[in-house]
Amino acid sequence: MRARTSSSSAGSRATSSTRSPPTPLPLLRANLLEMLLDGEAAASVVLNAAAVFDRADAGSAADIRLLRIMTPLAKAWTTARARVVTGEAMNVRGGNGYVEEWPNARLLRDGYLGAIWEGATNVVALDVQRAVLRDGGLDALSVFVTERLDRVTEPAAKPAVDGVRTALVDLARIAGRWPALARAERELDARPVADTLYHVLAASLLLAEGQILRDRRDDHRKLLAGALYTRRWLLPPASPGPFFPAKSLAWLEALADWTPVRVGALAVAG
Image 1 (cartoon, helix red, strand yellow):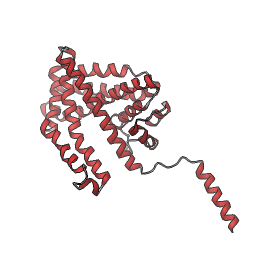
Image 2: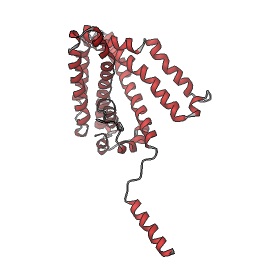
Image 3: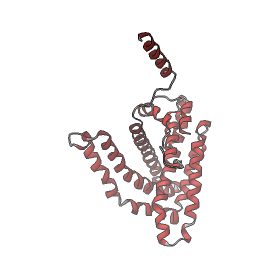
Image 4: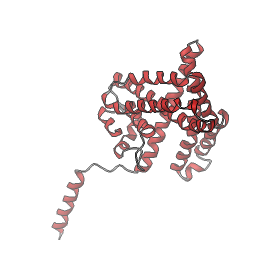
């Protein structure tokens, strides 16, 4: 009996050693990955908007038009999303996230402040729509986004780049119908279009910055972030299912710690 038990145990060990180790806490890792991508995308949008502001302030006509739409886009999404991200962070920490001894309760309260100070999210989304209809904002944004996407030459990032381009074309088609729509129908489009325009902008920035990092250091870490962001917000699953493939969750630590990532990692975002 002892010999048979030993043989069975050895067989189990041999079998388990040939399998990929399971990803621990996949639901939690998916939550953390989404929050990480939201924060990184918001940083890219805000910092690039600041650079556009500087150029507009110096008299650049193209950047004045671009700033007209980038400002409400950033305000609408980031202030609304802050409530979700801080709420999820509280949820992750459970009771420790709720009590005042931890910072999360304050962060959640502060997360509501942006949308209150900057105007209700619906009002800001309507401002995005006005920028499109009256100020040529979508044309300016399309040029800016397309220039960023054209810089991405990494073949493994092409599915993400194509996904962003397709979303931009779809948004232009929707906005092109607005002048002929009744006011109620047009305004109902304002928030979903503003949200998606933000994701198009954010994804193009992450991917373009990722190409720079790859060229300088042969590090595909930010291209992976851009590809996963694109998958989350612009290429949702066709049926109810996870936004991130299971294999992508294994890269959470590398993304969080800014550890260099090899090009093969981009396959997990496909």
